[in-house]
Image (cartoon, rainbow, N blue to C red; front, top):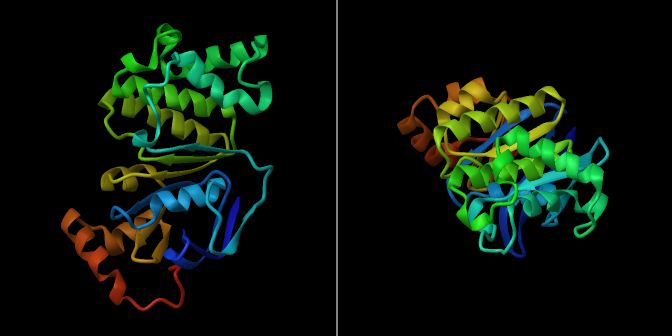
Amino acid sequence: MIEFHDLSVGYRNLVTFEHFTATIQAGDLVAIIGNNGSGKTTFLKTISGLIKPLSGRIKYFTNLNIAYLAQDNQIDRTFPADVRDLIRIGLWSQYGLFKRHSKANHIIDDALSAVGLENYAYKPLQILSGGQWQRALFARVIVQNANIILLDEPFSGVDQQTRYDLLKIIKNWQLQGRTILMVHHEMELMRSFFSKTILFKDKKIIFGETEKIWSRYVTSSHAYQENLKNVDTLKFMSSKVEC
């Protein structure tokens, strides 16, 4: 479980959002949506500890183990390594980066199998397609065995089969009681797959059950854009709206 109390987030004097209070339960599958630049990535980085909150606090009710999968454009694919090396990075806190350990090798083998890359273990990263690259990144998340998983637009540039396979992995994480927060831009996916949603707009956050947010703010693609424009005119008791 993650508890946000009066949280304000941003960079130095640039405030992304303010006074967010909410609780995300263990096993929640949460979509994060909003216009570009509205603060979605900053929010994930704050949860992961890469950025400190401007004010307020985040409380974790489990042993802290967070896996953060950044946007593809934030990861260097030209680094001279193979797929197995990339996945091994997810185990560095347990086994180190350079030691070869039999248990670590088995964990990596299992992760390769889970994402369908058994035959790509020793392939250089540069030759991977968009879908294969994202599968490799998911394998790195798998080996971390995290109880909180943060995904920033993981389906950007992937084929439909990869998208389907990765969604199955995400659903399995949820069934295991892990908490998943995922940034994406697909409205129908939000409605069909995620039980809860966080909507960002101009320093305000709407948080609640997906169906209720859908019916109030996202009834169509056009209505979605119009509602984003109109969020400023809504009167909130706080930055959080309980749906």
